[in-house]
Length: 497
Ligand code: BES
Ligand code: MN
Ligand code: ZN
Image (cartoon, rainbow, N blue to C red; front, top):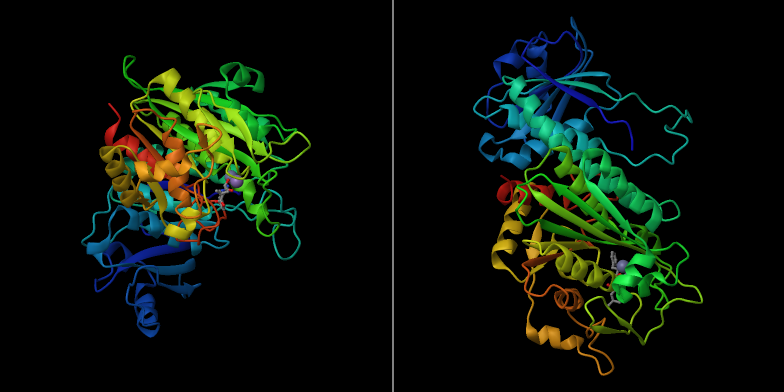
């Protein structure tokens, strides 16, 4: 991961050097703290000349303003004060990150007349700065255009606020979640030659340092458990298969855990039903679900969430060698149900079938939520701005939708039902692993539902949102870390204490 800026919170004082960022709302006066700056008058003229109106995300910049020692003075529009909801502050942090460039010392005056700018808002702003500052450049040996190998120095950012103590406290908590999201991005961005099932499992194992209990099941143990569905996918690869079981026990001892299950296909060639060459490189991200689960476990453990949480990820590489699974093969899943594998590229559901069954069987969780880059069809249906949400439980679905609105990791509920389920019936086995030509995201979800019994369950198809989604205020990287902030929020809202 690239070097992120460091952020601290202090009381208001007139800054004397470095870069100063001040916030300006639409149709409002400058805050007194900003007006007290030496070059405030010049800035007022400059904003007028630039026809700066304080629109969200717009900026005006003064370089080396006369009679001061400041390097830059930047006004940043925050839009209408009435529109400043929680996510606006995170996004604003993202905007701030774009104005940093090579600045060393940066002071942000968090003062907007009429708006709440307490600890929480300051911390949200800081989160946005970090999320946007992330770049995946560990394999770039030349960091800048001049061919110099040295990375630019990270900015030292001081946020001036009326509530530094509150900001520090709120940020300590939120930073755990940012770290989790950035960990998920790192895992998804990492190429498959570096990160196979074994290496991914080792990364999950590192959560032990935060007090997470981690068990790694090998092929041998999975074979004993009867996980023929998951192992069938892995059998064409020399990289092995793993199932990582993570437990964070921050809740009451007798409380049933909540559970998150992730698809961790470290590379998806499609197997014998091979994918076309064009765009296949994106399949290094086919473990985005598993990455989100690891990122979430990191977040919950690092902020010591008061909840009992299980995370399970099925790790395989879907590759092709002489031993690879063939179309028409019939495998027996841990549940005992048999599956006719008509397309070896519909492999994620085969991995999840055993992971979900194992999770339910061993932990009897309060609910299970799985995350998977499962189908191209969900991108056809929803584009890349909502993940597909499928659930057998209205309350859980509504809670996820709410968390999605709050974090802007948005989900959109899709239908399930017996008529769709029928499309999976097979002549030769209990089911086949693909439905018909249409509704591919739905039949995939229907397949998963056959492995969850009556446990409240939700499936998030994140094929469109976990990677390659259009950049936004808080992410410019290929991998988004989608799911970490969403699910942390779900846990925070309903399952702690
Ligand atoms: N990993 C893919 C889905 C995917 C596609 C994720 C594009 C991200 C971007 C999945 O394993 C897959 O290949 N699904 C097939 C299912 C089909 C064979 C029924 C698909 O969506 O085409
Ligand atoms: Mn596939
Ligand atoms: Zn896949």
